[in-house]
Amino acid sequence: MISVENIFSLSELPVNSRNEIIDTLVNAANVRVERIVSCGQKSPEGFWYDQQENEWVILLKGNAILEFEVSGSIELQAGDYLNIPAHQKHRILSTSENPECVWIAVFY
Image (cartoon, rainbow, N blue to C red):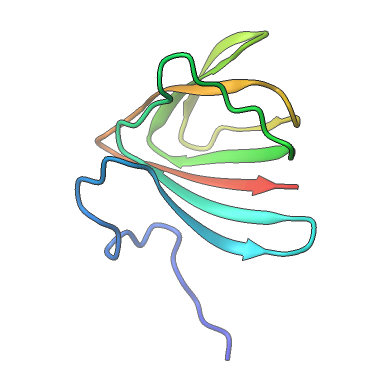
């Protein structure tokens, strides 16, 4: 049976979580799709993501600032998306709290 869910349905999520909430929506051999909900979280000082996979990410709700080791920071608003190549070091400088950030990340 095929079930329909809504990407903005946040009713099952913990209230006031200190961590981002990550739900894996699809996990196949060469691709993984995640819904990420952020509410004020940011990367720890001095921490950089250095991923083995490419990541295509879209911010569906909220706003955020990402920083790239090589090219500096960029601001994202709802609807903005980008592709982050594997091993492109990056970090999250800020995420909005009201509204919370709802992301879709596709790792391939």
